[in-house]
Amino acid sequence: MVIGILVSALCVTAVGLFVGIFLGVAGKKFAVEVDERETLILDALPGANCGGCGQAGCAAMAHEIVEGNAPVNGCPVGGDSVANKIAEIMGQSVSAEEPKVAFVKCSGTCTKAKDKHIYTGQMDCKMLAMTPGGGPKACSYGCLGGGTCVRVCPFDAIHIIDGIAVVDPEKCKACGKCIENCPRHMIEMKPKKSKYAVQCSSKDKGPAVMKVCSAGCIGCGLCQKNCPKDAIHVVDNIAHIDYDKCVGCGICANKCPKKVITKLG
Image (cartoon, rainbow, N blue to C red; front, side):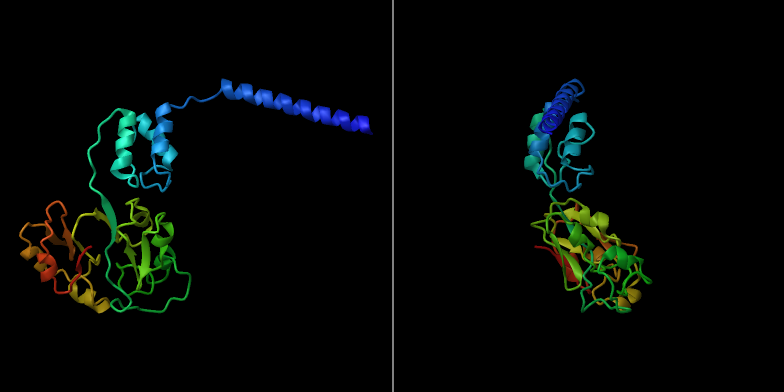
């Protein structure tokens, strides 16, 4: 019996050694060479793997940069510091990108937006959007308040407050996950330095807006008429700010009768 055990142990050991040697030789023979720059870039990236760059993760982004299929400043989380490191590794120059931040285009809080029925199911925006009528809120454009954006944000930068999503600009890295997962498509990227934003996304006409929300844009055009820089226009019954032209004078906000042009910061 002892001899049988020893023979079995020796066989297992021999097989293990053979497999180990075989895998070692095969690993060297069939190894895929990795560009040293790819490793350096991966080390320079923040490692959030958020997908905000449009790639599956930081490793995929590093590979695409080396292959020339992605820009050296394509990581929205790393910002200028990471872009400069990657540019140095790639032997390229990079121009400074304007920092951006996500903004929720809705001011329909619990006290301002009306409900058409009571919902008692799971709180998830995508699920709410698929229910009859598209959720309990009477406005078909506003924030559903289900918190899908909160759950997908890798930086804890967005929370549901008083029934609507609110972005913390100091935590937001502009990865775009909230925008990608919002079924109402009412979250947008804007320059972080911008001083004003239109906090509504309804395309209905004024009377219809007022029936469902006391804080909606009625498309009156007073902001457009009084802007000295031609930086705001009413399109599809909703005001839009051209941030390339806006100087932050605040006239549009002062003239807005519904106060949906919000001063930021």
